[in-house]
Length: 192
Image 1 (tube, one colour):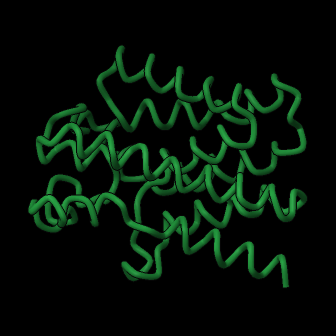
Image 2 (spheres, rainbow, N blue to C red):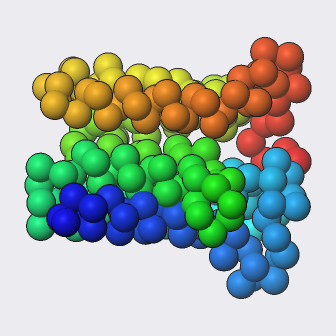
């Protein structure tokens, strides 16, 4: 029962579409009809509302972290599963016909709550790549791609499997971005 409860609650927490909720509350309409149609912070930024994009980024990361931290209080052995369930909730929310975000902020929240040096390394990598390339998607792919390496570097082989699964899921959700990056048609940060 504990396993089922943790997985369901973490999934439901992860499935809260903060980007969609916040843009509607701000009177900006349905974020899915803007830019890339994604519900994440990068697309919220395309509305021109930087504070709203920052809040979306924070809340999407926080829901992953909260799922991990709450589970750690009741069933520490289920913490990685809680993180995975929260990420799946973000990627495939039941409320949006299983069409969710790309999972980067939520994944970073999960990794930070599991092991803060891993999370900070992923964040630093994202910031460096984004600053140099001006591509949010490339920064996401490189930073999440290095998460398993950081897990090994910081001696967290116990969560290596989770870092690899996160990598696979995030890369799958970025398949169109990868194609556009190859074609040179991927919009840069702040572009529509």
